[in-house]
Structure formats: structure tokens, C-alpha cells
Length: 507
Image 1 (spheres, one colour):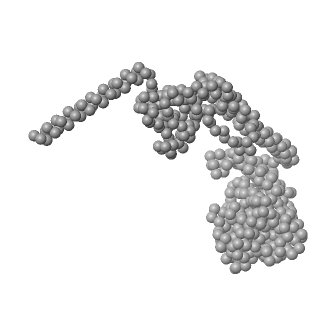
Image 2 (cartoon, rainbow, N blue to C red; image 1 turned 180 degrees about the vertical axis):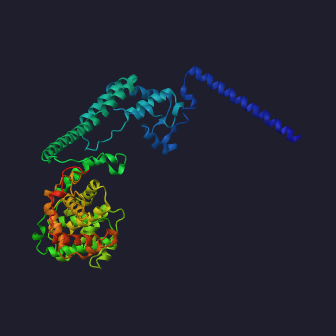
């Protein structure tokens, strides 16, 4: 029974306390309604309670500063706020308008938020507007014409608060239009430069095409058969090979550089090239890599004088560069250093690579003779035997120093001519072969063909090169070509028999 009585008493006391609280709230509402004092919701007695951000929560002052409001201010009585509003209004009428940032007008007050009275919101916005800090510019506090334009736009915003959004948008548009104007000038100037380059290139190309040879032979368009093969790029092939013909002249070495070298003789170059073929064969590299390596070496020696003890390093660095350019998986530097039998270290090979590329100005866009040989093989119906013999005969042109300075396309056409002559094809040279070789006729190839025949008749000078093509992989091309050349000369036959040459298409 005692416990029940206690519960009843607790309920009675609780109901009384709730009723008294309700009465107090109603009285407060009536007072607010009669006196019109909005500060009574947040502050009970203005004399007893003063809320200060610095005394209660110092860290909130930093947050308020981010929103454009100083944290050292306190919320005081309504009389003080009214006095401060009057002073601020007087200052606004006398003083010129101050720059306003968009963050102060749009962002909320962190301590009061939406629940703050309207007078406090207006006063806080006006106070914050008057105490906006000026950020110094990066260029030694120099003010440009754009800064004055911004200030004029902002003063208009202060004078017309009802049109703040429209004026802000217009000001932002004006400010944003300054940078694109500069960009437009840059693009216009660059476009003018590009147009000038195009016009100069067109003039140069027009001059080059004027010097082209007149086509006085019959030929077929064999590229039409490859329209459905993307690897043959039949759409661009007529642009690719004229470009390669232009590059031939840019990447040609000096034909007389061996006579300008003080310590180098033609015999030394032949030994060096033969050793390079051995290293190329050991690493099982592509034939394009060997052609590019020898071209790099010849072009370097055309520009720089090389000592005898550095020739092997030059050949190693040239093959190292060519393998990086042509191969999918290039051998490591350790393999090259090991192949030199410890004559040169890895660092020396890398230093040689840097020096070679610097002297050549990183120009490695060499039109490989294998590309021209494949192009001519199209007119030869891609015969494997003539193409294999052509590879051997074409590689002679990089082994012998007498071919230095000859165009790769000319050497490829001459190699294909002799290969077809060895196989007894009739006619040896026709209109399609003239066209797909780049327009070379037999009269243009006589010098190169005679040099190849002289090499075949002479004793073997490059042992590694001869052994390479004496294998079954290359159909013993070196043995076949040398045997045919001796027999051909012994029979006193004519290399340029008119009966074996025609300008028409074979039927």
C-alpha cells in the first residue's frame, strides 16, 4: 500500500509541475505579443545573460570567420542592436560602397541559423559587409583595370539590393569574358601559323610534283585486290611510299665519309659490319634491325671522327638503338656487354647510345629497304624464291662500302631485277615492276646492278654474311647467286638484254 501511495503522490506532483510550466509559457507568449520583443525567445534576462562566442566556444569563431562574420561579437540587448543599426545606416550614407562577396549574402550564420530573428540577420549581414577583408593581389598589390571594373559592378550591387542576382550574373559574365578573349587570340595566332605551314607545304609539294617523271609505261592497279584487308592499307599506300621516297634523301649517309676519317679504312668497316651481322644473327633479330643499325653507324661516322678502339662500341650502340626501334622484345644491355667479351661495360654502351642519338638529333625515321622490296614483290606475285634471293642481294648493298650513298629504293629494285634474272623469268622487268619499284627503269639501275655483280664474282669477303645465307632457311641463296654469277660471266651474256625488258603488262 505504501508503494501505491508514493506513486500517486509522484503523479500528482508531476501534473502540478507541468501545469505550472504551461502557465508560465502562456504568460511569456502574452508578454511577447504585447511588447513585440523577438529577443525574448532566445534571451530571458538581458541584464543577466550575455552569449559570447569567445568565452563559451572559442573554436566556433574560426568557423564564423569562414562565413564572413567575426566571432568576437556578442548578442546583446535589443537596444544595443538598434543603436548599432542606426550607426551603420549613417556610415552607409556617408561612406562609399565597399566590395561585397557573394559568400556573405548567400551563406548562413553558423551560430543562429534560420532561427535567428530578422533584425539580427539584417544587422549581421550589414556588419559582415562592412568588415570584408581585402585580399592582396599576387603582382605586388598592383591594381589592374579589371579590378576597378569589378569594384564598380559591386557598388552597383550595393546600391540596388533588389537586383543583386541579375547584377551578379552580369558582372560574372563580364569577368569571365576576359580570359576567353586571350585564349581566342592564342588560338587565332596558332591557327594562322598552321595555315602558313600548310600553304608552304603545299607549295613545296607542288614544286616536287612538277619534277616527277612522266609515266610512259603500262601498269595495273594491284592494290584494288586488298581493299578488304586492313593490314595492306590500300587506301593510304599511294601516300606512304612517296613519303618514304622523300625520307630517303634525308637519311642518306655521306658517300665519301670513309675518306674523311683519319683512322678508318674501308677494310675496317667490312670487318666491323661482318661482326655486326654475327651479333644480329645470335640475337635472332629482324632484318629491318640490321639495315637500320648500319644506317645509324654510317650516318654517325659521316658527322663525327671515330677512333679505332671505339668502332666496336659504335656498332654495339647502333644495334642497341635499332633493336629498340624495330623489335617487339629488345635484348637487354647485359647481352650486348656479354657479346663484346667484356670490352665494354653496360654504362659505356648506354653512354654511347645517348651520344649517338644526340649527334643524329634522334632522327631514326629511316625508310627501310625491306619495305621497298615487299612493295616490288607485289608486282612479282609474292614469289618466295625471288624474294629470298632478293633479300640476300639487297643485304649486299649494306655490307659493301661501295653502295654507301645509294638510295634504298634503287638497291631494292636492282636486287629484284637480278633475282628474277637468276630464276629465268621472262620478262625480267615489265610495266608493273617499274611502277611498284618507284618508277625505276633498267637504265636507272645499271650502276647498282653492275656493283652487285662485281661483289658476287669477287672472293668471299664477309664470312659470317656468307654463312648466314648458305643455310636451308634462306634456300642457300649465297651459294646459288655466286654460282650463277660466275656462270653468267663465263658465258659472256648481257645483263641488260632488250629482249628481257618490256614496258608493257605481261599477259
